[in-house]
Amino acid sequence: MRLGAGAREADGLMEGDLASAMRRSIRRIPDFPKKGIVFRDITTLWKDPALVRKTVDAIYEHYRDRRVDKVLGIEARGFVFGALLAERFGVGFIPARKMGKLPAERVMEEYQLEYRVDGLEMHKDSVQPGDHVLIIDDLIATAGTALAVTKMVERLGGKVVGLAFVVELTFLHGREKLGPYDIFSLVRYASEDE
Image 1 (tube, rainbow, N blue to C red):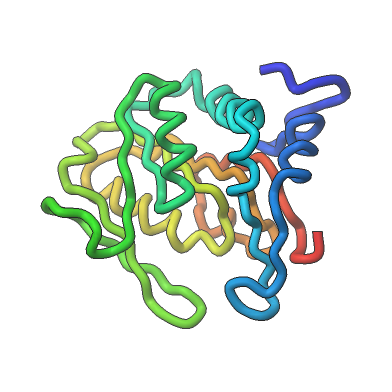
Image 2 (spheres, rainbow, N blue to C red):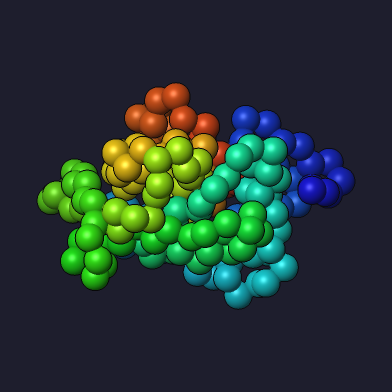
């Protein structure tokens, strides 16, 4: 993938034209969902189809030489990028949903939020033993949801190829909690103030 003049790729961080365009596109909303938190709204990025395509291309390029049998998107914004990546790889898509939204037999994993316990589910038949699964979400903060889906994939006999994120909040150290997995992010924020 061509990154543009003066661009480089280092440790999963895309620098140059793409990262700059993404930063300009991502809306910053202070004090949402509660005071002191800055929400990174990537829905503004979706207004630009060329930027969406470049975002998907960058993630695809990082994983294209690896075996990917399925792409798993985490509710809800991970569905958009996950479905696009699954189509690009020519593989199936798995939705990881909030509890109580899936109709068939499912597997569930809880995770801790600041103020409550939450959980994600996926259908038991979505991952077959030996499937290589790429996980995608819009943002990694504390890694609670990412850890939950890796556990479900592995419980069903799948292998996690990697975890890709559009945005990474590095000051929350979610990457460190994911241990040995390949983590790829496109835009990183080192503080709430960026």
